[in-house]
Length: 638
Image (cartoon, rainbow, N blue to C red):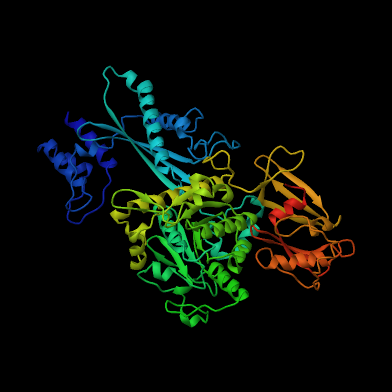
């Protein structure tokens, strides 16, 4: 009996981890154990076993506790269990794991299947038995998403846990417990770990990704989405919406940045008071700076830039930013591309009011994923909001949502009053927006107090502002939903009669083609342009001549009368820039002046201008920026 006990204890010493401690006697050797054989072997073995279990001077483990990691499943059973769980998670019949927004299974059916998302990353299991003989199976799984900006992420995690618990229970019932005469309780614990991919700029045509990253530069190379917040009227609360949207998206778990591009009147230093407002240099490159990080959001504004920079209006106490359009465009480009933004799921851009040079620069330099319009209920503001929505639509940028600020107020009696009318709700057909994408904010003293204190509403979260916080939460959910469906190349299911993207149709083609993904190239051999368009299931290639492109309006795509000499409009054949705003009239003059049959209608150079369109430098000296929509219409789209 003593010999068997000695053999068991000797094996136990080799299994236990041991770290030498100068104040603890080392575990006994075989000779010392034999020495104590006739002096109460069991008593000495227990004493030495306790000493050998020390991991720290004051930490002991009893012999009973040392058995807590004993496996009650064999290695073969553990492997079979993990395989069973993976098969269940990746099975098309597991309908609980269908993403409620994308309507796709989050598992991976096979390497070539596109109807599943492939977010399930790994599975591991561990079995334990504690000193009360309670058995537990711990299952750890990891899922990897493009970003954490998923409105239904918590629901997906809950469903994964439920599926794993049920799959584990079924496996135990059919493989383990049926072999036992008496059923025993086995605890099942599931841990779901969520990670994200490194963000990369969104592009609908993956062949353009490398070119897009080169154009964006190193500072924006890892920014997935750009969302513009705009208004065509000043003083409607655009900056308030932009700031609170950014912090609400960050609260959802997203990696978010906020850039104040209202260079004529930067608002960010007033709305946000960071602990350290210093803008520091970045090691990424010469002239690059780092954004300010405040409460989980990276922020930057001309108001945070040092007044010694020489830029008009810079600094917290800077004067009026008096600058012409070209200077404003250069400042915007420097704030965008001269900043090391790092890894971001979305960069929120707070644009200045109107539809001028800053807006055009943004649409040409970036591929905006979408925009949010801000207005008030008055008829005048709604009229301007319609113009803004039309402008961004013509640039190939969908308006994801519209916020009607100061829409109503509630009196103490509980009634809701609309002092400025229900402007935006009455104008839905004109605006082309769905009711589910309209968000109304009340007239609120709490919002004003939060702005004045430098702590946005979605950061301070006062109890009395629960109504406003709910609106911002719904707005962030809607924006994140649209970005999610955009990234996966599908349309939103919010309303079936409305499409998120601007599309055109062609004769003999049964499905629409996305305007924003239009590609324009030149066939030098034939002397023609090649227009490529993409749909959800295919592509279309059309050749057009220089005459066909020159006879359409570069912004709207409407056909121009080039032989109309009665207009009295003549222009010198100089370089003409445009595409939005005042530049369009100059292009029309140039079109009318030139005779399409006599001009050298062949391009010298073409450059892509973000999601807006292409700049074409013609052999006759004209440089014209064509919108994606106008190129599609030149190819016969409608």
